[in-house]
Length: 280
Image 1 (spheres, rainbow, N blue to C red):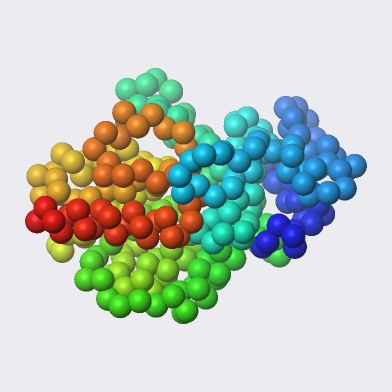
Image 2: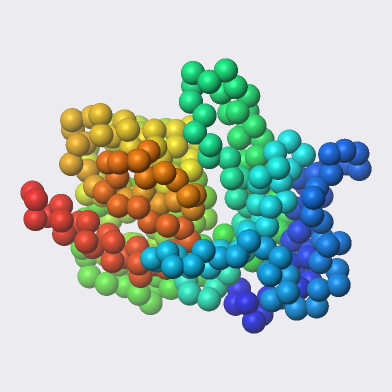
């Protein structure tokens, strides 16, 4: 949805739905922000002005507005209004913001994993409720991407990509765009799926890997890929919306900041695949 078509009522309704699901009941604790905080703001610009500002100056990044609404068990979950893949088209999503580096030897690891599952369940419930009310979600992004794929067809690239993202609609939409560019594309939706796939031939020519995933996150997948002699030359393009320390992923072939324009992704894929071709 373009910003000029988005209304203040839609954003307030999205916040109200989020809060009703993430903060059930009337007891404590209570959210720090609700839709009532936006009742007297008459313009969309005014409402988005209360969100965290989009990051500036990051190559490839589109605009991403974030409002920390939290949930009854975790204060950092966010409501996100962002462009993704397509310039000037905005979609609502929930960022669980729970990608802290908690290792298995941490005594709180089991509780942390359970909390992440709880956050993911809330995210699915909130986004499904938004979709039922006709608000712009990643399901709309998928439909838009599939429509664009019909008019962006190119010749075959003779390259196989393995695309991994736990946002199923984003993954499918991006897969359609990449197939239209001539790539052979396989999809996976979590770290375990991608590791299982990489045990089989043929090895993909490039792995486009999401950083934040259930089961195994991007950092864990990358570590296992690089520890496997069979996969040591596999280019891995890591995509993340988090401000991660790049020292955690020193053997990624490239890092792409979400949300990104599809043209930026296409250029990076072309560069990494050409580099692989020259080396082989």
